[in-house]
Image (cartoon, rainbow over all chains, first blue to last red; front, side, top):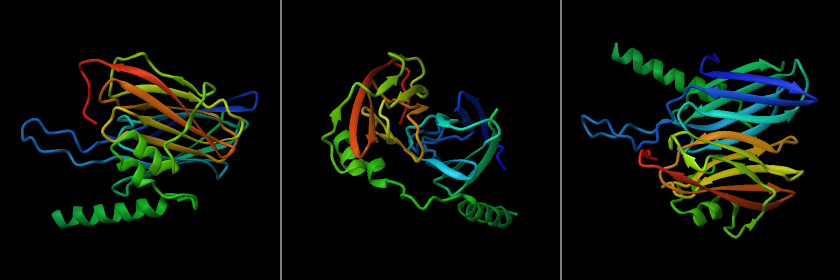
Length: 103
Length: 147
């Protein structure tokens, strides 16, 4: 679990900056296979949930216009040692979760 | 063998849906994501397309997108009690792109979006129950992507 998500979180003056990259194709459903002309079916992340110390601090809904291998960064109040968890759920029902500690 | 992989895929799907820590708050706003025009997307997402402009919302994005499939966007809402931040790419076939709901004091999000053509990046912020909008034009060159 968590292999698809990279998270870094560091704290300065009580402010935690979180940066993350998720490995995901984010297929729009419009891209075509050049040889056959067939469209590649849509496959994209629809929901993101972020929690700090097991409390949900952010929820995001995404569409197909988010780039491949999505990047997500945000800032919240917190301190060193806090646990930041990011989970995603895609349109096929696949999901992943990763947690990191604030440095 | 084929049956086995199918079975495994099924298990993976159901496990994924169970493991995901679904919040009690809010369902996926399908209507907004399906809308083909900016005003309709706004009506679907916020109940109104009539949203006042505000310079307090800071949008950082390139003037010209080097890679239209990955246009970096940095947003600072500028409002004290920001409840949500939404990104709409006006020129995309489905303009509504992302809706971030913030449950603790936060005013910054950053991500990367696809842009099919030159157009406005529109950001809508909800703070103290009031909607505010700001926009920033981004030029897209010849090597545009399909969205």
